[in-house]
Length: 147
Image (tube, rainbow, N blue to C red):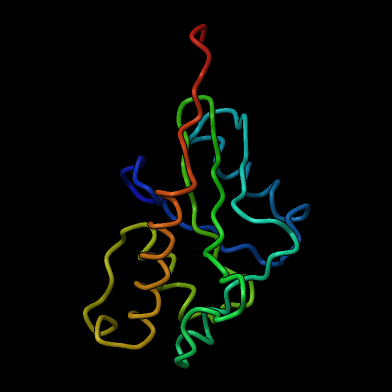
C-alpha cells in the first residue's frame, strides 16, 4: 500500500491463486489494522471475464484485441475508517514484473537501473490503465451520519 492513501490507486494486491474464496481472508486480515473493520469489498470484474496477461504485454502484445477488451482488475476495500482501491496483479505474473507493478501502484521508489526497461514501461502502463479504470469505476462509500 502507498504511504499516503486516498489516490485513485492506493497500492496493489498480488494473490497467490485465482481463488478469491481462498485469498480474501488474508487480504481482509492484512487491511483491518490500517482501515478498521472491513465493511465492504467491491470488485470491478465478473468471474467470466478474463484477466490481463501482463507478461504477454512485455513481449509486445499490449492490451487484448478481443471484442471486449480486458481491463485491469481492481478491488475496492471499505473499512470503518477509510476506503482504498487496489490493483489486482494476476497470480501468474512473473516475479520481476509483478514486483515492479506493486511498487508503481504503491508509488514506492524504483531503482534507476529499472526505469529504462521494457518491464518498467509495462508496469507503468498497467498502473496508468488502472488509474483510468479506478477514476471511472471506484467511488467512495458514503458512511451513515451516525458513524
